[in-house]
Image 1 (cartoon, rainbow, N blue to C red):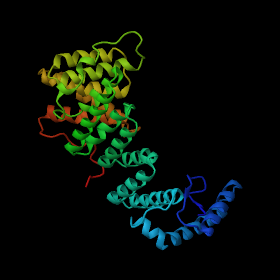
Image 2 (image 1 turned 90 degrees about the vertical axis):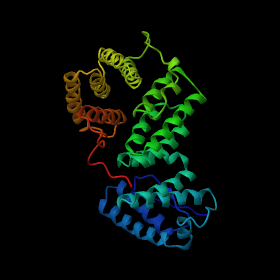
Image 3 (image 1 turned 135 degrees about the vertical axis):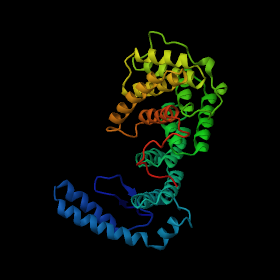
Image 4 (image 1 turned 90 degrees about the horizontal axis):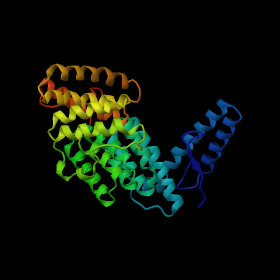
Length: 336
């Protein structure tokens, strides 16, 4: 089978097509040449011609059959080609906010090309489609079971999906991954990932006996603020508000970055509320409000910011006496 390559643009990633198409390959090659020669109008002309040829290709019986999941790719070249067509169709679904259809195409694509799951995860996370992003994040974690930072990146997305079952399933899976290859370094992200919501997991199931109570002088400079902040979260979830306040103070002594500081403030607010110190709790909430708003002007979907926001909403609901925290963002795309 002769394979030509379809692209979103002359410099985009190439995708082989499942059936030959001379005209499509010709126009993409011409478009790339024109761009390299700094002839933008000619490049645009050939891209338009390539788009027309691609439409014709998609209307062939073979392509329609593959896209309708009525046939199996004949070989690796056709498999790559089908993945390329699914990629393009998923992009169109996303542009028209047909999220279920987009997710279905990405699932099929990843089954053929597992290395594409990172891109799916990033796309749905950036679109604030939390439940879909969490699903792809779990696949990514299973592909990279020793990459414990993924546990912390996926956990807040599962919480924000507003489906308790999704977060509970994630926590169970993360705990399984830890038990398959327990290490001292993975205890910290495990605890942090599984304690974002009260009551999701039985704390006694966590390997607390392997979580150190202090750090030695060899710990990297970035670790102490996060370590003590996570210990504060664990103490608060365990019902020890006094210890939570103490550990927050220890974290703050190590000059945490803004993300860690935001998390500390939310834990401090809840702990002070439990200790019946309303003024201190309110001050922490007000500081957290200002800091989180400033951080959201940057990477609004950074996992540590999402964690801080989740804890902040819990603190706000607790202190204001409401029954349920507000969504992480009123502008967040509604979930189906």
